[in-house]
Image (cartoon, rainbow, N blue to C red; front, side, top):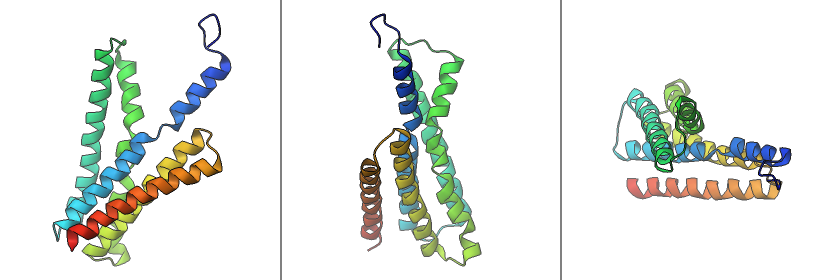
Amino acid sequence: MSGTGHATPRAVRNAERRARADCTGGVYGSMLAASVIIGAGALGSFPRLELVLLLLLTGVAFWIAHVHAQVFGARLTQRRLDLQAVLGVCRDEWPIVEAAVPPAAAVAVSPLLGLGIEATVWFALAVAVAGQVGWSTTAARRGGASHGLMAVTAGVNLVLGLLIIAFKLFLTH
């Protein structure tokens, strides 16, 4: 901020870059999808269509919950709340839903790949973890992070994904 209280062009560019870099919903949505896959897979046999719908509908339900929390939070902090603000929150939280699509697609195409139920679960789980790593790396790149920091965030998210996989192994044995 300059001394007059107005944002400098550089400050505005940096704020815009940080806003574009926020892929929190995508990372969160990928972890959510992995959790849904583990939960469904641990319960045994299930129809693929049911898992596809469960992934997508869970993503939408969590998106709505996040939008509500953001809008309610804005109301509590007395910020101006109008349709544009609500639509902005809807857009900002949409990556939660986007992150559910690749694992759901993996489940949907699994019969074409000749995968049984157990292999489908592992395939979808791998896609969800890859998405989690991808979202975090994208956020770091968009935020102007160095290659080293992008590698760190990818590594942290890979470890978190492997932790989810360890939970699956624990639940099925």
